[in-house]
Amino acid sequence: MAFRNRKAPTTDEFVVVSQGEKGGKYDPSIPAEAYATGFMEFTDTAPTIYHANHYLSKALEEHGFEYLDEREDWTDRLTKGNKFYTTRGTTTVLAFTKGKHWQPSHGAGIVGTHIDSLTCVVKPISIKEPIDDFELIGVAPYAGALSDLWWDRDLGIGGRMIVREGRGITEKLVRIPHPIARIASLAPHFGKFAQGPFNPETQKVPFIGLAKDGKLPEPTEDEKKSPVVGQHSLRLLRALSRESGVPVRDILSVELHLFDTQPAALGGIDKEFIFAPRVDNKACTYSGVYGFIEAADTVVESDSLSVVVAYDNEEIGSRSRTGAQGNILEAAVDRIFAAEDCCPDDAKKAVFWANSFFLSADVTHATNPNFSDVYMTNHKPKLNKGITVTFAPGGNMITNANTSAFVQEIARRTDNTIQYFQVRNDSPTGGTIGPYLASKTGIRGVDLGIAQLSMHSIRATIGSEDIWLGVKFFKSFFNTWREVDLEFQLGSL
Image 1 (cartoon, one colour):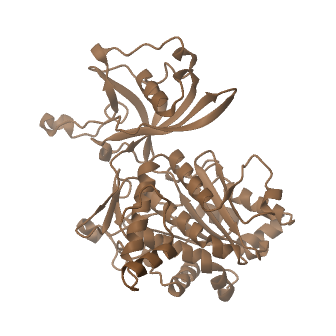
Image 2 (cartoon, rainbow, N blue to C red; image 1 turned 120 degrees about the vertical axis):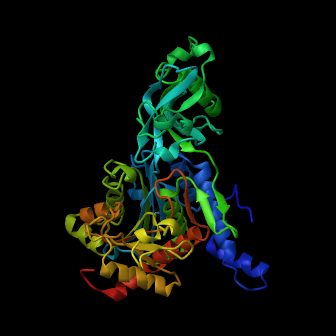
Image 3 (tube, rainbow, N blue to C red; image 1 turned 180 degrees about the vertical axis):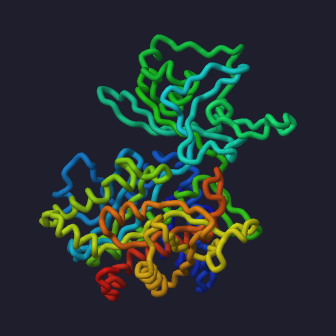
């Protein structure tokens, strides 16, 4: 089944299709393949965080969500609708669905992910002198990028440009569609020189072309009107101009990333796998957002408030206005309170957060068959089995006995499978956005996510059913968390 160039299907849509094609027998492979294809389209067509934000914003709009500008007052708008979204910095997106019978004391069911991935960021002044006729470009690693796993990959370039448009200044997305850069390894025949370690500033510099006779082109008088001429390769700026339709003279600033251009693919004998770039954390973001979208119509008729937020900058600590240590979620809650004629004082907000539940959704480690002994027995997440709940007694995760039981009950009622993971005592553990939100607000929650192989590699592996299972789980959470919470009634849960 091919679902490229169309919006992602809904679970109900594919139950109907599979029943029709299989004579009334439900075939789970059909929705799994459809969602796998939808995810692959997402990661292929939205390789930078700016494109991913735009992709998700358009998906929300197509499903009836109304855009709210952070610079404007939302109060009147919120009293006339139920489905909204906002963005911050073209990198973070937040959406919410407000039930007709919701009250602030009911809290909210919230899924938080991060939308940023490991990448190489083009430096503010990236132009470099040619070396042996190679035109080079200066880049800096974002998080764990520019490791040895980035050798010899076909790298594309894209991002956002600040441009003059008429009398105003606006932002424009741009992406060169073919590989433009490469970081060449040194052949092993050179012996010790090819063994490393390698200097990331001087020995991992991408080349983007050949300078004819070692000389770079000169700008025209018209092109010199742009402040970025002389800061970046003129050939690169001209390529960006061709792709965007913006004259070089009108380009005021650029923020560009390098990324793996090899398309995502289904793999394995029976297509059990997805091999893809940027799985961390586009997999949980895609699943979380589409689970949220599919639950929206049910939530609108309920007494619940659903929120999904895809943050930036998790890979570098979340400490930014667009990261989880920023306040986009808390500010949105304050505005929702104000629209309910409910002054968002500290006491009322404390009640709201105490009655809310948060899923910190980030990928976790699937069991690598070549290194099975580095995992704890009974803590070996498998592909195509379902969401994995993660624990870390050192404080890197927010999961505890009460909150994991809460999620397990949701899974039991909705036919979802839960796996569990914790690292060995002799292994380090990563972090997530969960502790930041919990420490700021007092919200209850768990850390969980889709299991993947090769985390922080330029290319990773998940199960081809895992996106479908993620959407199914997140949809179930938004539809049932409130009724489960009312039954638990544990107070300090």
